[in-house]
Image 1 (cartoon, one colour):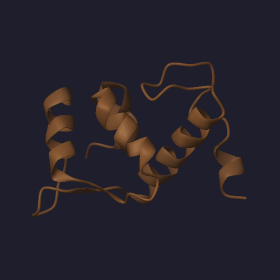
Image 2: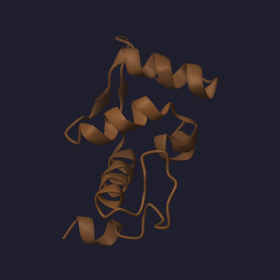
Image 3: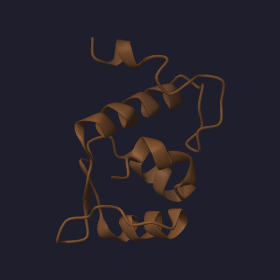
Image 4: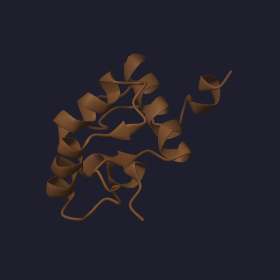
Length: 93
């Protein structure tokens, strides 16, 4: 099964920005699922409506990614000096 954290660097930067700009999002809408699938060349496990529901692990990854971007260590495409999980332990305090 494809996990967002394993394909993050291959996802369209516009989709990355959308996901990071919508922190309350639990599901990736069908139009964005289509863009992700086109950019990575494989299929996500979407539901009957074509939407992709983030797992708990993926939500932790995205929360850490947003936090790292806020701290200035990462851009949406994953380029930067801080690993995505450097501050993950602080996020749940």
